[in-house]
Image (cartoon, rainbow, N blue to C red):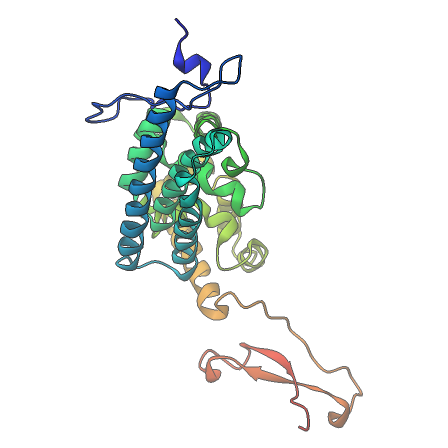
Amino acid sequence: MTDPERSHPEVFTAAVPLPDNDGRTVYPPRPDADGQYALSEVLDWDIFMNQTYVQLRRGCSFARSALSSLTLSVESASKAQDCVRQIESILPWFLRRELFLIPDQQRLKDVCGMLFSEITVWAGLTDCLQMYARFIVGSADKWLPLSEALVENHLEKQKDWRHARAPVHWVKRVTNNIAEKESWLTWNAIDRSKEPDVISLEEIAKTPLEGLLERKYSHHSLAELEAAAKEDPETAEYLACKIHNPSWPSEAIALHLNWDKKRGQRVDRRYRRLRKELRDRGMGIQCRQYRPPVGLSEANFTVHFEELFDGARGRGVGVWQHHQSGY
């Protein structure tokens, strides 16, 4: 007798048994050599698709309600809501009963599952991510690599699980690759005998998402940070290490730079103050310094300097604007 799991490699099997799983696995029906489908398999699939539609629709309603009760950044809330909208746009596919759509329904079912997983990343729901990591890769401790696998490629406009034939398999493989790479880097960059105990992510960043994506998706550019840190050699050295190892806490960076713990904490505080100062000063606005060319009369000069924040943060904080017509 043929093993269903081998004949259906696109079907993902949880790394650990699902709780209260008293049902049986329904596999996508396939035609025989004559192009005929087994009626029992088709009926099972129809029932399964009806259940999938109902559960996903309920999940979208719950997600919208839960997201409205969370305090999220505008960007995170927008991306989480976008995931919900994507799931809702897929739902009608599960109500169609054309046999040739069965492979697409199988794949889209997994896409919806990964979209729900991505929602938990944007919402910063660490407990949910740990649960997903346990069932997908077999270890709750891999929730951070799982988060990267779910969102990083898409944010960089590269192909990810959305383009894979078997989305969950893609996420599992990439998660394990990221975890293995980070483990190798940590082992080779840090003296394991002096490695600090596990540090909660809250000590690294305000939210799990900030800790995960800070290096590439902060409110200010790395170039701006690096330029501001040049005046402080220690902060510049700390920042360079942080850029190459964004998941390392301050203790790990201090060990790598051969600093004692207090020195590392002191430089980390300076780094955070610098980052906050840049964020507060410009709020992500890219400004450039500009002055009128020497010898140009005021009548021929068509721009003016407009102070930001009503001058409360100094006369140097502002942007050059073109005069309104008729000025």
